[in-house]
View 1: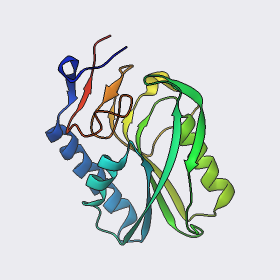
View 2 (view 1 turned 90 degrees about the vertical axis):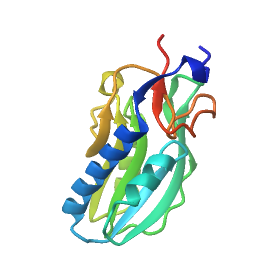
View 3 (view 1 turned 120 degrees about the vertical axis):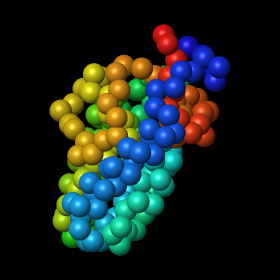
Length: 177
């Protein structure tokens, strides 16, 4: 499958994304009530979402970045998670918010939650994903917060890529298969 920008249909517009991100931030502001949070952005896909989300968070916040990989080809997952770069400070006793672009099989989310449990004794751990693709789930895991549920479409834009391209789109698009 090859994806060209002219083949894309808008799934979520820039306006829809920004409205939902503000709603998610409000939910988090109410949950954390001013407590310090360490937000961990999963690169590269979640960077656009994470940046826009933290602009609306009102608590003291530190940001960390990790890089994982689970895609085998441009459009399908390999089924295993690779920790490309996962250096984190001591998170013991901290409120941790993991920010991800999409939960599809759930393998990456499970890997991260398990990693946190093995390596740290956090005060709280919340998982936030912009997109939740429940239809492709392979493990029993649900994000604490998510922006939108999507069906089994290959999506690009707003951080999500096709072979490294289209992350810079202001919307999330898909190609009819």
